[in-house]
Image 1 (spheres, chains in turn purple, blue):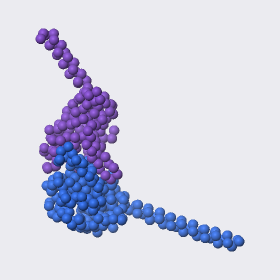
Image 2 (image 1 turned 90 degrees about the vertical axis):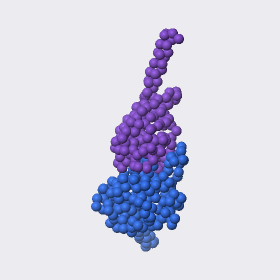
Image 3 (image 1 turned 120 degrees about the horizontal axis):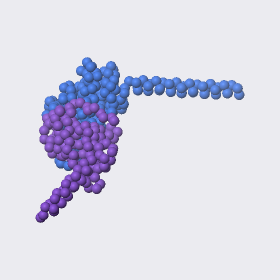
Image 4 (image 1 turned 90 degrees about the horizontal axis):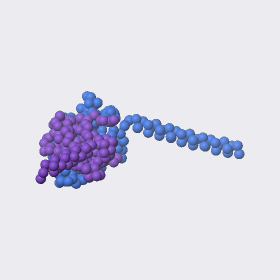
Length: 154
Length: 209
């Protein structure tokens, strides 16, 4: 293998790396998790997701929970309905709010209580229609269980 | 001829007057009822002051409890589960706001949170969870096998949605809060989106009865 080939390979890798970074379009804002008490095994994570190119949130993971899923809460009259979503659409340039009363990331089979102020690492996996994948690392801050977060109505 | 016409007019006037009076009366009664409570009145049904005999309801300290134990206070009873990420903490949070809005009258109010998920909501978990919102709140836990009958007794719809693992199922459930007056009579069905201020106003009305 000559040096030319090696440098060509490096160039290719570099281009690929740059290309994959160019897909890093999704950004996150205001990520938080509702705190839990001892023995509580589930809670929700909330945030606003924004992207320049339409994509889908296809899965999530966190070291604090064995099972992480995207859920949607719907009020049907005086009935609260909870559904796991296989995918969550993130349209281009239209922020998607994961918030109480709507979409959220469920952290289930928690390994320990989540204490106020703690940072919970979350890994979000996205995939767009062209099968381009993207991973986003998020640190969500734990807010007190017994308080309501300020609503972002903008 | 003229006499007949006069009689007809008199009858018509009489009927109109009666109808008008009835309308005004109904308007007054409806308006005064609407002014008393912000939340819908439960007039036609009561679920009793005792759970179904074998519901085995205990509080978060393990003490057997009946609804009648809380007679003398306005009782707000609602159903949920601690894994609920959203509606249940919101309802409990509203209850904390109501308690602070009530001021000294809060001592005449009892908040009860009944678990629909006693398999996962152990007594210990309820003891950690419910009083974390307000030390006066009481968590209640039926026997797991009694949940369907208890939900039927209180007309609370619920459904278990299987999860990706056996322990990660979720629940759909009704979010109505029942309000009882101090005599133990079921009075109101408070909706989830009713403001803490309106709930407080209704409790004050119930306390003034």
